[in-house]
Image (cartoon, rainbow over all chains, first blue to last red; front, side, top):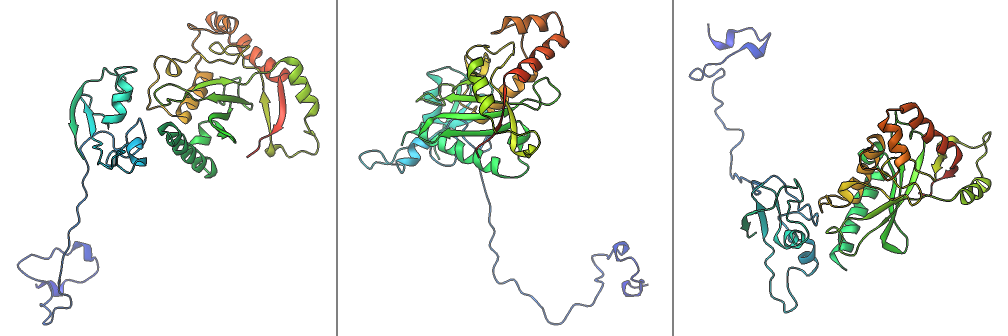
Length: 121
Length: 196
């Protein structure tokens, strides 16, 4: 029994074998893929995406650098890096530097703050 | 503009958006109003609703919030607005609330006393660790107020600012505790409409 003779009552049950195509191949291709553009998104593999201190996104500069347009008074570009603690929470380096002079804890979990790495965006 | 002002504007936009939307989490948490005074971004006012299933329910309280210039590195100073008896009776006599003709949806019962183990009865100061030595810049004005609302339903009699209320809880006299709160709500409340 060929695939065409199966009554089409429940199309979900028809399991077409890969080597036996259900319908004869159309002579003319209806669509042809001319160009295919893949888009990928990425972000750091960290627990939080927003800096809990200034509430700016961590992919952007901190609230202080944001207003200066990312440049200092002499027009030089300021590096606004992100700091990651051993607890895997991250903040802008500028923000966490200010906070740990008050209390040396992670603002999100209150554990003692220890810097694990500094990432430059 | 300082980074403190920018952060406050950011919080203001978030709060206003949530307060305007119909079924927002901010309203179900009990925050009725939260906004800066019209001429000073470092002084905010809030109105909170007493949590349901506590003696504080069906009543609102007003709070004033003083924000330090280096917020959020330092916590905001939040306290309940309390008034003297004569000030309250003046407000009560001026209230335009009419039991028969007023639409109850527009009116709230604002209480100007706060009998609670962790709140100073005279000044309205609040004893809450996260607003003092356990403050973290990850807190916001909104989350601080939610913490205060949670404190109303979860008093901590072991670190009291109001010893009389704490003692009622320590000897597990829930009936006297609730009755005292309801007594002050009945005596020191004003029927008001809230400005939007």
